[in-house]
Image (cartoon, rainbow, N blue to C red; front, side):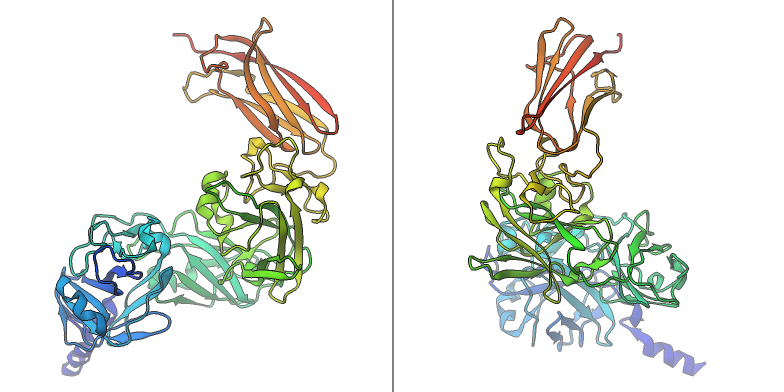
Length: 569
C-alpha cells in the first residue's frame, strides 16, 4: 500500500495530476508589436494568469514559439486569479512597475502578423497554446503596433479569435492587471471540420475550426470514411492546439477518387459536441497539369477600397492540392514575376470546385455576394494593373497550367466605369486566351461572382431567351409572403443590355426599373411595388416591358402582365 501512495505522489504536480494542469494557467495578453508606443515600454511580453483554484509554482516552466524556447528559472508561485509578466531579461526592469515580472533568457521574438506560442510545465506537459493572428485585433490602427492583444474571457481559453481583441486601455495594454476587455464570453458553439486532406494513401489529416478535447479526438470509432474504408485503425491528435487529427487508415485510398469523411461524438475543450459541420470530402490528390484548373474570373481594377481577386475552377476529374499551385504575373520583358504559393498547408480542390484567391477575403465578401465563404484563400497577390496584365497559374514543378493576358478593352463597351467590375470567362471549356470568351460580370450579379458560377457562363445548346415573372400576383405589404416580384431572365449568350419599364392599365409608365442594365446569361431583377418616386402604387394590373439588345444589333422585347394586390383591412 505504501508503494502505491509513493507512486501517486510522484505524479502529483502543484496539488493536481501533472497531465491535468492543461489550461490552468493561460496566456491572456500578448504584446507582439510594441512600436509605436501608446504608453507602454516598447518591449515584447506576454502575461500569464492562474485560473485554477490553487497556487502553481512556475519554476522550470517553458514558453516557446517555433524558433526558440525560454525557461523560467525563478522559484515563483502564481496565486489563483493572479498575473505575471514574462519577458526578456533586458526588458524586465522596464515592465516591473506594472506588476510581477519574470525576465527569462532566450525569450521568443513574437511575430507581428501572427505566431504559435506555447506554455509547458517543467515536465513538458502542454498547459496552454495560442495561435494568434493580426486580424484578432479587430482594429486596423491598433494592429499596426503599440497595443496588446487581450483575452476576453479567461475561463474560455480555447476559442481562438472569438475570444481575443485589442486592448482598450489608454496605455495600449494592461500588463500585470486584469484585462481592459475582461468579460464573460461563453463558448457555446459546436466545433466543426474546416477541411481534410490525404498526405498519402494511408493517412488523412482533418483540420477543425477550434481545438478539440484530445481524448475524444483519438477515439477511432468517432470517424468513418466512405467507399469501404470505414473507421481508422488509429488516430493521432496533433498538439499543441489539438485542432487537427491524423487518421491512420485500415485500407488505402485510390488516387483522384472522392471520399466522404464523417466525424461524430467529438467535443471541444468546453464540452460542446460537433454539430452539422461534421462531413467533409477527402481524396488522394494528383499534381496539377495543363488546363485541369483554369482561370475563370479576374478582378484587376477593384473599387477604391477594394482588392484584386482571381478565381480558378477545377474542370477536370482530378483532385488538386492547392499547396502545389502558384500564382504569378509577367514583367515588361515577359518574364515570370511575383511567384506566390496559394497555400502553405494542404487544401484540396475537388472536381467542379471554385477557389477565390485574394489578399483580403473579408473585403471581397463585403463588396460581392459570397455564396460559399469556404471557397476563399488569402495570400499575397501579384500586381495586376488596371489596364492590362498577365495572370499565370503554375504547379510546384514550374509547369504553367493556365495563363491569361487580359485587357481592360475586353470589358463591355457600354460600361462607363470598369472600376469594381470583374471579367468573367464565358465557357471554361474553351481556350483561356480568347478575348471573345471573356465578358464583364452582369449588373444583376453585382459585377462579380467570386466562388460560384459566372453570371456570363454559357454552354452550347441553351435556348435563345426567356423572361418570366414570379409570382404573377404579388402583395407588397411586408407580411413576408410574396412581397417582391422577381423578373427572371435567361439568354443564349452574354452581352445583352436591358431596359425594364412598368406601365399601369392605362398604358402610362409608372416605374423605370432598369436602365441600360448589363445582363448575364442568367439572372434577375426585382420590383417592390413602388413607383418612380418610391410611392405605393394602387392595386391592379400592371405590364412589365423588357427591351433587350446587344452591340451586334440583336434585339428582343418581352411583355409580361403582373397583378399588384393587397390584403383587405
